[in-house]
Amino acid sequence: MVKASINNLVGIAVDDSYPWIDTLFISTGVASLKEEDYEKCSAHIFIKKTNNLNISDCRDIGGEIFISHHTIVDTRYGVRIDRNDSRNITLTVTQECNEWLTICLQLLLLELDCTLIHAAALEKDGDVILLPSWGGVGKTATVIKMISEGGWKLLGDDLVILNGSQVEPFLKPFVIYPYHQSLFPDIFRQHKGKVVTNLTISKLMSKAIPFAKKIMRPIPRLLAFARKYNPQSMRVSPMRIFKKEELSKGGVLKKVIWLERTVGENTDYYQENIERIVSKTASVSIMELLGDRITCVFSLYGAGVFDYHKTNHKMYELILKAYKKLNCYELDIPTSVPIHEVGSVVLNYVINENNKESFVG
Image (cartoon, rainbow, N blue to C red; front, side):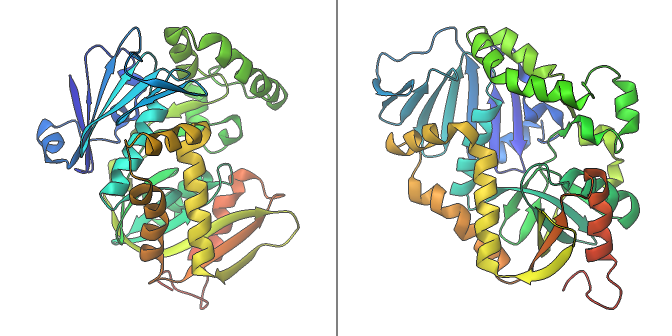
């Protein structure tokens, strides 16, 4: 059995019966694999594999969801979720479960007054700049530029943990797409042919993927293989990209900048209403974390596995509490600016603004 700890907050134990542990984010440097750290955690998730999900004690509520007291079964995605007691969750699965593991981790973190945020985050001298935004706006390009030229350390380019005023690392693998080729030339050379770099072919594959998933879903091993070797992207651990001294263990949140891509020619940087930035941050984080499982998550509330107020409302409250002591900004970057140049824009407008504004605002 593998035991892991997410920042000494949530422990994750994976039974030997689970065959896809190398695809779980806990095996890529996100988590500590020390058993003593696992034991320190206030909440725990246990993962085990089964060939057939037990629904004999549940009733059908439609949408391939079955529920009973403190239990839901999602037959479409092959998982049974049981709440064993106040802080222990069991995932019994027939297929790879990274998405459901992330959801349950987030809901347990919220109960512990922490939350995952969909954002890039960097630290320097103990101070953290948080860059929440949509996917695909250039967060990865930004962290590459700020680390290589600005002397910053990485906390995450996609998800980080907000714990009060502290931002803690969540160093999940970078998802590298064809448009990142100029940012990671060495990675693409090392893995030549692994990712389709022809954008026309890639777009055609995107249209075909939903149909391919439906075909492969009844064959869990095939689906896991396809996800692991997706020709449209590759996952690379930050430990393979950055030096140890370029990775941060956390710091105090000092500045929030919402990154936006806009249609037009002008780049604009301005102070924004805090509640508006909080709303945007919470919304894109929910979209990223829950995705197409959002209906199932509300089934978790209905079945009593999680409490709606302690989780769904909590995210907004935690983000607002962290942001309200700060100035919040928005940086609008035209869509005409290529992804690989976004980092330079952020560095020039925010960090190198001579005589306009310091980092701490």
